Length: 410
Image (cartoon, rainbow, N blue to C red; front, top):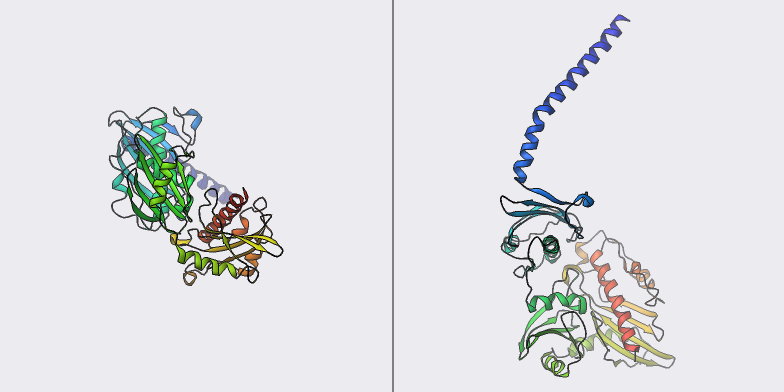
């Protein structure tokens, strides 16, 4: 019994000694940790902390902005950024420093879940830029990651500008027009918003253009006096003009200027598309090309098909899939807009490199049959283990439904 009591007392004493030692270590190291933290931040004060936005001095709406510090001695702002919009959707953490003149002093990549190399020039290209980021270009082959980083930095710069801590930079007309393309003509860009196409020379008021890699049309930059416009020519040469706010503009002179430069219709592509569609139609059915009354983005072929039993509408869509390569999908809709046939030239690009996806093509296609635009939810396009292909099929399907709406609007 006495031995048990002695053992318990020994344990209590040992625990007391350990607690005392821990307290002593903490007492000694706490000032050191605090000093190191202060040295790291210098004389910076916290202006914004996403963990406690209500207690922050600033109003910040972007989720990518995690914290903002101000250092009046060094005359810089330090911004912690985090985004998951890269290729892998894992975290990409950045530390951005901006001087009081509104110019980027440095950009550090703290953590990157994407394994693709951004190259040596990308991060340094941010140095000296204002909030317009006019001198920062996306990295070819790494557009998702470089776009995610650029967008996060833009969020950080905008947070400073919106809180009147710096003066916002001014974007030139070309930059504003390039940023307009994803919203009015997504068929020219990939999911990251990077242009997929060949740059073309302009003439007169049309300064330059881009021919879409998927054959859906072309976009043209216009400078008419002090006014800038974006001209878009579809796959059969129809032209639309947009102002910098994305509003349609009726200007026959500008439309004619774009039409003269627009890439000629690719007859070989259309012939191949018609042959593929014919396999989905009743024997002997005639495909009559249609010109749509607007843009259907990835759609590169639209046809009116009269049959003995009524009318069908046939479409080809060519969205960007894995590695920004063009996929090709074929759809036939009835006069009510319901899908009666759907095929793909190739659903999984580079299938020899992928083993994790699950796909029964026959059952997959059957999921689309009978669906209208109102009934389509997007989940029908999902291919487990093949996100890029799934996104491409979803884009194609939505664009085809829009093409049907445009085709039957008149």
